[in-house]
Image (cartoon, rainbow, N blue to C red; front, side, top):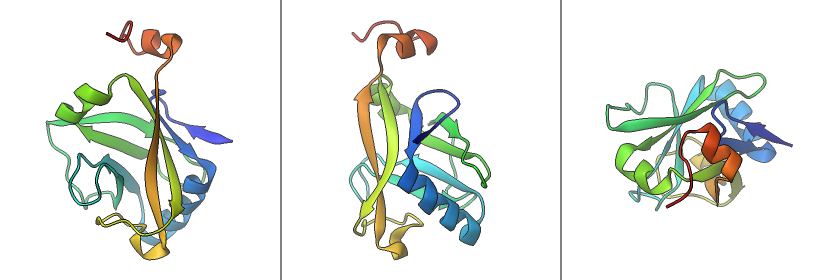
Length: 132
């Protein structure tokens, strides 16, 4: 089972949700910012809310509701969003350490993004029309 975001742009795989519950119990409310290439390539970076400040050039892709936690907002820079706006993202977790500042670093795991193109129904619901 995968946890779906409210906008249909982001899902969270079960293993990632389990890790997020553990991290939330330790650090409080969490958020993601999809890295645009700094630090750990293009990895989703997870931070306690307030530790990474978003600005007017960041887009909130989705809000994911995970049982037992505060909602998790997922952001990406506006310029990066232009390249990714036709994709659906799934936040997952794998063994290994990332090179960034993401909160899961000490766990021996790292968050990753799995992506696919949005289907026609999803494109229509988001008001995007056909992929150019």
